[in-house]
Image (cartoon, rainbow, N blue to C red; front, side):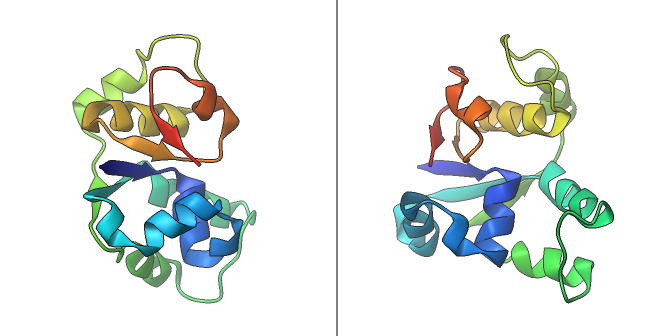
Length: 132
């Protein structure tokens, strides 16, 4: 099975794993349970914007944090390709207008991956699979 981490899932796994659901925490702590983890290239940007807006804080160099947080078993960073960029703007409606969510959902659809997310809007969106 292939999973894509929503940005908050990636951040929480690396900062506050207790915030994750028991299912997601168990899955991420046992790499044998999945074939591949994906992370959209938009997620490190979203993390950086949270730092910039002081919505989260860290006690180390942000670039080091990102580098270490990307060091997860079977994790592949998915670039924002022209196809994903376009498909993020033409998702079946209705859907959330948040550009980062659109990119993550388009990436999940392109990669045929289940999104690990607590986001209720994404969970209710019938055109992707989610797990929480």
